[in-house]
Length: 383
Image 1: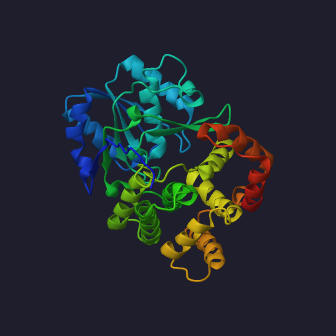
Image 2: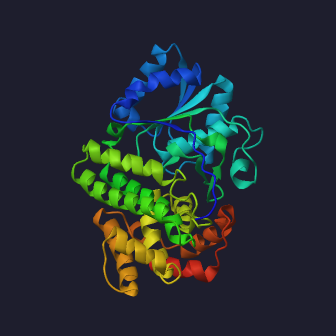
Image 3: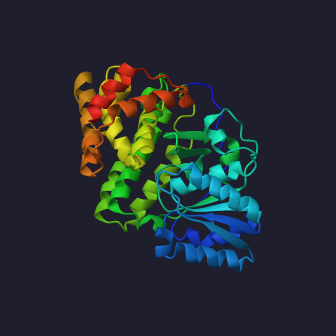
């Protein structure tokens, strides 16, 4: 195990009906809030109305920024910063999933930055300050509720890039699994793929062979998500299984599974971000297309971990080559079973050279170097 520093200051408020305790945390964040929402589901199901009521009961005020896309864009960040500065808000409250949270984090950082907020993503600029942020989670997927990461897309450049900094940790995250029961089945499936992908990136690519605790975290999270996903797809109002998925999502990108594993790569996300940026497909759907192809190309390089994955997650027995091959097949079968796509043809995508170009261009933002032959092999298996 490598030396490490682990730091996570987020106060998690977890459990059924915890949404209704939001008032006590809002009081701490000041008297004027910028509420950020997506395209309308929180209105449809009465969540926004209830949040507005709690803010008013506190004697506070608010402004609403709505219309955040599933793949959040820098234009909405710019709009939010302008509103936040004009209204002189004290804090940001996000009501939604990862796209809303990431937009909120970018606005929180951009509020104190004098230049264009895309600079924070495209240049090596340390985030020195940010508005305090509260998360009320309605989609369990990205783990943004429990980490200091924001991923934003620039449609003009066709780049999707992340920033990270301690100032971007939420102050409070309300994790009420009841708020996720209305999530459609397709996005429930895509969300589960995203959770699994977060823990597998480090698990597969770390070259430290003495990480039994971290490996155990990852294997348990994957098994739990697989099990719970089937149950909530059959019974969307199964709050107990929704709770399992919600906590798995939060833990998955909190840093706990990668603390001590040394250097690792996020290649699957790099490749998927090209798909999102170029074709605006759901992030989780893109990942289920990328991961099996990436695993097939890297089956020899990461055979030790693929073997452990197949054995410990899927219970596969046999010689190493068989278990490695079967582990890839079983994960791809899970994606197929939950109806998350595994081929680019599902979306009619054929612009393979554009994908390759985008991946190679954006690789340095993740401290990666991707050559043309390597990405070509992966893309070929994604078709």
